Image (spheres, rainbow, N blue to C red):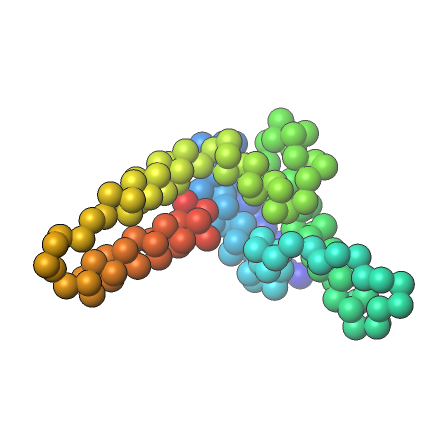
Length: 151
């Protein structure tokens, strides 16, 4: 528990104010990874299991729901009071999407520029397909990495 508190102090010292979203999000991912709860950032809570579902499915659902709640609390505790009020009724994924919409203008611009370059990619007549395809794959991978890294 001492390790959790020392790492969480990173977020206490660097509360989300808005302009520091990317730094805050990077620190949040580090803390959730250390607590083995980072999967909640990418994996939605599964549907509520049926009443006749096996115990393993019910436990997995409850564990995911509990981890999501814990991550939500960590996130809310590391925000300014104004941001806490705006996000207090959201789950982890909804909160991240909303915060990205509000504050990740730089990442949005990067993704736009990459998309623009991708859509303008044209193969020169008579040239080899391989370099063209590799360039397009590289652009797509760069765009996807930007999405998953929060930038």
